[in-house]
Length: 613
Image 1 (cartoon, rainbow, N blue to C red):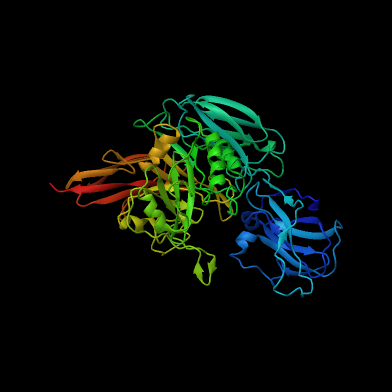
Image 2: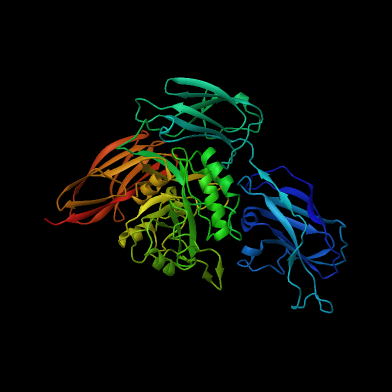
């Protein structure tokens, strides 16, 4: 039979709004009193993202619900079972005769994270009490479940996402104009809205209902250019706003991110997210499809590159992953790498490569194991062409079994050549050090496995920013129910899979949170991520160029955990040379900067080796 919705609510993304549903269960068999009935979500991530406030079923004794916990499932086991409601029948149900179910829920704050519900049944053995431990296993009914849909809310933002440099193929700047709800979901205007835009001396307009893409000519003389859009306030409906806009008379105006006119030292800037999860892996805790995720990365957040990182994909799942990755990969438009995550109890790390038949494929020729960091390290030692990136290094799991976390902070042991990057910021917060001011979003403290701890023990690591979101929306996270975007910037020869991988390998990277600032950090002309060998006594001079989206509250150069230079700037463009004194020992330097609007960035370290005369 089926579980059907009698009244489908037009639920939109919310952190608090409650929607009521009337469901009807049509049993596929006659079930005797004492039979246990469970309502389960299709995926763990759906159950996690939705909040069930109330659930009731006619003719039953509730065993587990938002209000009842007499027979609550084990939280760790329920990551696989996804139980949201459990009850014991008090009276016989008849095949195909409707049973009413009421449900009140707040949906996910991510659009497309629909809640699929299915019915599972456990019947008691004949002659045994319903409470007897010797019972039939719980089985899922064959009938269809139901899907509670969630869409974007009303427009409350307008985002302008430009590629940071002109396309090598077309010579134009691809720009996405996206109306969004308050959580960053692409939304739609209630009625067509006129959008005026200016780009240098060019003025034009278009009419929009939902997201649009435009191609802009390459900027000419300015060190960086930013698109400006204007929308008349009286064209918005009563439910709509552009909260991230500034007021100019009758208009709300929004500026895009900086765009370079061309290359710098033969390289172009590019942005992407290489750490996010989908529903591709069966039993994993991702959401949305891989194709939907890549589509949003390319056409909504307008990224230059991306890479999925689902947990330990098996052979068929990896085949689907590579097929989808290859379908989206397009040189000079959108580069897509291959990747997966190895989650171990000694820390989590992702593996990336440019060839799908790499030995580092989970379960591939090398049989790279998951779940054991020491075993994986031994196998990786014999491989080439694989990049390992640890993440949330300074955090332990919140879910525990017998008081022991499911996973621990990252175990920084001996450095490895292929562990060349570290994710310095993600949805679990900033991982730079063990103590922060609030502006830097350090959500975990004093685990002694921070990025600074790793650098102090000899690891040579560049910086990436990733979301680690499990909802199939690359680049997007929510901090305190507020939309944030976290990405990695790279300096690369081309937006092409092999070139992007090489730039990641060379550590020519910077991490950004809530900004698409273009960052150039060099030391004695050695670009960030590089290694610089100098004679003792050599003068060290840092070159620092930042094209930010807001004035810079602070810009710091850090060495061995200490700030060795700091300044503030009232403008959005910085281009300075900073003397750092004479080289007297082997060390490293990296840059961090905080915008006055809360966005921040980290440029990868430059590693200095001092040679004796």
